[in-house]
Length: 412
Image (cartoon, rainbow, N blue to C red; front, side, top):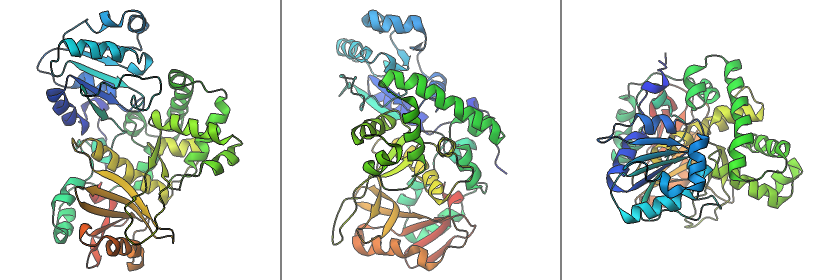
């Protein structure tokens, strides 16, 4: 049985990374989709010295940010400023303040959009800021462990000891379908027990996103068209991105599709997973694959009740993203696909080593399920760690000399 805790009591993996960044840099920028818990994270962080908290959701604060940004950033020696994407020019005032007094940990800035991708943001705070992304909660965060899966431990452990490492994990068995339907936004994941309640929350979230967040980021001429595009993307979770096909299916011109996909990525809804591009002997597919930041919202937007194997892949990717972005020296996460159709769902590249991961929605994996992992290992030789095949059953076993099949719930 999974024990669900109250949202405020749960530790987040990003908290320790945020603390490290505050010790090193004058500004720490925390971004992520609305409702991932950014405000809770920055307001509950234990600070050695008090901080002034301001949010641009407060109309008086927002007006000062537009009219007198220099006065706003002078309201305290240490400031936390929430939802800065509503007044991106405030970043220039922060830069000037930091250049006058370069103390560490002076500013925490949060935003519901990737400020580095926003065209309206001309100031990136280069050399002055660290950037941290807060994704929806992982399974282990939801059950109170404050972490992502055991990816760091796998990378640090010899391949032949992986089975012992995984079987030693004392975590509850999970239902991946329920996890996919709940997603990782704290409210539906932790506080709402029924599918109907979660559907109501997701509908309200979508409406808020369309009517408020998008207005802050870009002008959308037709919200119904944008909704259709979101639904089309969510119906293609785990598939290669084809903008021409998407445009044809939703009757939109390709430039509009391109711009709106960028907007979805900027606002941390769409995840484009890049293809692994190191080509040794095989011709590789390099187009990105499409995923959604939260599987619960993706299922809602697609109008689907039952998650598929692609959603199990998305659950694993969401965990990998939380883990990756909590590292001060983040590894890369990609997928691998050849022109002849061989494919590995995820490739972690850490240093000069590669860890290939395949995800199968089966409780009895077979040797044939590992054939693409074997092809990848043959292709990259000594750079490659053992292949990891995650499945929905209970058994951890070697399918071959260097292919370990393991239950997803023991790793995530």
